[in-house]
Image (cartoon, rainbow, N blue to C red; front, side, top):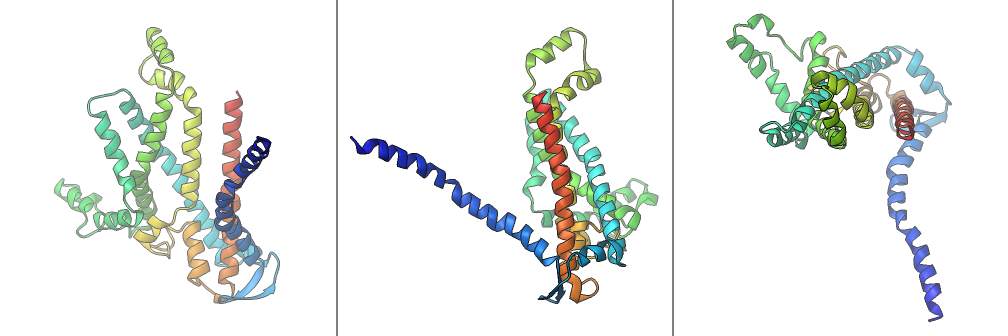
Length: 307
């Protein structure tokens, strides 16, 4: 009986050992790559051989040396466009669809599953299929426009710099609308039914209901979707790589920071001696942008929760 308190105390301490595997994985796959990238960015490189310590020279080259500075600002602009268009198109459509499903119209259960199905596909498969659909010669889009007598609207969607980026963003919006829909739907279902019913009794309906009752009660889901969309937009790589390759074709019109990083660090876009160091500097800048703005969004979420 005297050993029982000691055994209980030992078991209580053993509970603290359970997070260690998760912590080790986090340190190995998250913290170490970040620290390694920052360390690599401070050295000059020749191929994969690390040379002398050069401080922040790679960061200076990234922002001042041609063509890297031009490519960086061009890619950053495309990331911002990627985020804005996804917020308007993908999340706007997702919210409207979630509201329709929330109204429990006929077939709403099927619509919920149907809109989420693209998310189950591989991004590479999605990119390959849409590349075929957008083909200027035999693609479904141009063939359909031609059949409808709108042949003047047909164009090389992925071959024209003015339409290539927006085409990829719309494909990505089609791919991602299901996840945003589910988050918005969960937010709508968390709104107390008494509030909605009381508003209807007061004559609040339609768009006025959405603007004055629904949206103010859905701030948290909206912020969550905004953060996820921002991170996804600034990490955009797989779909662009599958549809346009690592050069952000045509003429870097679909280049983003992730594609620029891949091309710089592993593709040797210019001088091989600075590729890894410059790519690591770019990775650190990408991490800083995503981390700072995501932290600002999370701080806003915390402030909303406290209110």
